[in-house]
Image 1 (cartoon, rainbow, N blue to C red):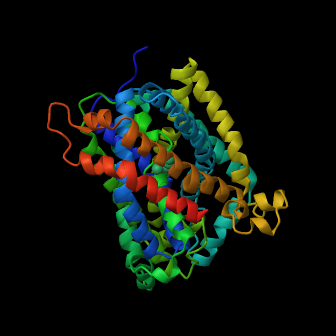
Image 2: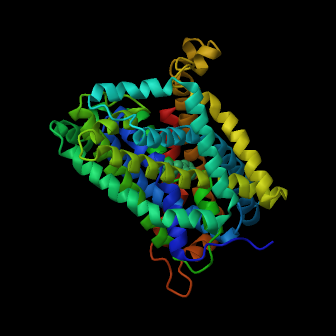
Image 3: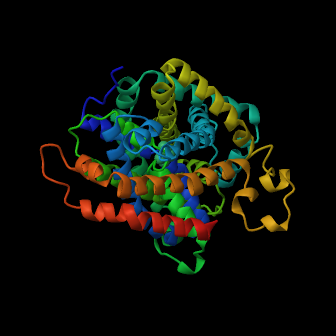
Length: 456
Ligand code: PHE
């Protein structure tokens, strides 16, 4: 069967950027920076993005385009042997990520509706902060919006590549970018914002632990959509002509730019209003309504912001579901419709515990359920609430591990083919090919394994 393809390179850049830019930038990055010491986290994150992140992204692009297949099929075709295991790991990571991603995506839809119906119109920041707690502890609503978000994701994936993904990304991403900049300007000029700026931009190395380093690495992979085959799968829908190194640089810079500006939008406001920077996954939802309250036409901004964020989240969610579906279509001969509907339902079910985890199940952890003893005191994963544990498992373990395998694959198993693929068709060779392969062979695997071993 002929494969769907992106019509243009621009279409591909927008889809890849649509995958990268999402809740990872606007929801997760600010609260991770808040929990992990601010400036030092920012510097570590940028370091990982520009070295390992960029290289792994190019690795995924080249493998995907060379193979024209889903993650499992790509490793099977180009490498054979045990390499396809990496593809299966990626598909598994997709399940884990989308299960909680869809829950948070549901929060953004709920907040867009709240903005429309006047639910965010209090002016006292403390009241607005408390409103998130009330929202999250009401399971019926949270689960309903989780369902709605999943239905929308499935609906777009059913439309196939060009119909759904390209069109949405093209118009709405630039709008979201403009809005985030406006909000950052408002946040930075609030009275008392300077403490937040200092927290976010001036690294305090005394607070850095291996957990911080691991968190920054995981955030780099999560935010760039790396390590599970999302970028690989998108590149498999690409025709031969696009310049992959250039595309990788553009997508990476766009994604990182979004994250840094989102940090400027949230953290100065956190300090200006006297919130707790370490508040965790609710931080953006607690802080931004207080910022909107300080703006003329605040409810209009609030609606636009949460609606556009929901759409950015959808374009990312689509890229998480697509590799899973592509695997079932290419390798198992299942139809797109059955595969998409079935996986959407299974992943929605898998997300239910996460949906409950900030509310009724907020004290449920693996350690408590299994009554683990003091031997487990050092293992982060088992002490987190369910949403936090899912996120940690995916971002801090599965994605970096998947990224290492892709880097090793490109560095050692198929380096010649990958370099050829990275060189522009008709144009010259890729000038930094040597450096790229060196990073894939040695730097990325060594650095990631070192962080994983120390961080876990
Ligand atoms: N990068 C996306 C975001 O920042 C999330 C994502 C992770 C997408 C992994 C695909 C794969 O929201």
